[in-house]
Length: 575
Image (spheres, rainbow, N blue to C red):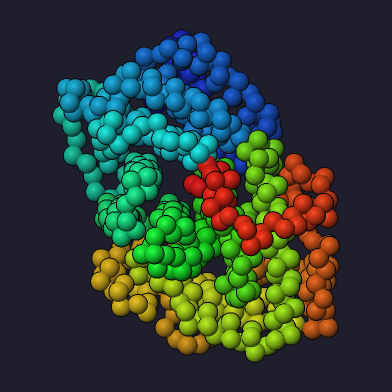
């Protein structure tokens, strides 16, 4: 491609039509990946103008090569790049439709069969593998967004994953296949995404074939070990790629865990009902986990260069489940932790807020949020009037730590919960919930890999954790003293309402809602609520809060069907 780009600079019109389409697609992808200020400084125009210009050029180039009927692998490369980035502009349905076309074109070219069976040169084999697995990633993303089945079944292809090579290791004139490298290469990020894609497909198929929870846990564990041994242990911990990979791995674990345990929320037999309570607690904690890591991926400056990859992901399943389940719980520190994560949920690019996908789901989520907000107000008043009950809830939650699969603990005495317990105590006792709490950055949310092993309480988990790569573990403080009190050199924790950054409700919001900064303010107002920015900047922004609250009346009566929520938001972004 270096030669192609050199030629494109001086004699673009002399390139073949296929390479013109490919270079246009790459230019378009480059614009998508840049922040608006970078586009302005480099191209001298706004990002919206640049996107319109380069998208139009790409579409025209694809049209000229008749991409609907192509058998040219270069054209298919251009189409796959276009589909991977056009989603940024909210074109989920377009991606879904054209992904099916691209996969059919790829099958017509035989990409679903590994090149080793076709006596192809090493360069062509690797090119075909990379392209095919890129299409598989598009397939699973489109299926998740639109709530459809996968186009490509497990038994319909045998194309291997790409080899772990640097681009310079392979060229068109190479006769013998090079030996794959160990450690980080130019392919590391793609290969990690391939492993994630493979795991996601296995989980989807396992759920459809009613595999047991233990079988799915084992499958997930095997993938983690493989990825760690192949890639993560070789990456320099000061590399931004390592930070992103760490957060992605932990976020993915929570999401897969969410999917694995979700069916157990609807037990069909007495035997399955025994798993219900455990599943309910664990899925709730996983939902909080998902929201926290999603926020981190959008605001951490260390992963700024990769941020565009996550801007179209909105975890509607986790948000919806958290809000619904919170309305049925007493307002404990864990619930407040999740609430702050929802409030701090990163505001999406304004372009995304204008898409049909956002329009279709934001109003129901607003209703869920308002319902949960009312419940929070009532619970704060109730617990302020009954401090014995508040102390009982806090103690019970501290003692009932939930051990997630693979040995990591969520809840109990982990460091992040210590911070939120302090915040919750201040809120319930009539203090200011905007008060910053300072402490060390919890390893749970740290961008670096924790150096200590996790602590857990269930003996049944010990046999699993011996084989867990350190990369995936969550460190738990061993001291009974909260880390934010014990630290000699505290630093602000600026996420999720703790520290100097976003801290949930400000003083004005607290007073508007009646949850005042003084113990005298203990009569929450149910009629004046300030929505989070990511909900207020929406197509229904002109709808008053009072109208939304009225529409919300009776939303979760005793007859509420819990299974409906999954049906209603199916395919809206569990990614």
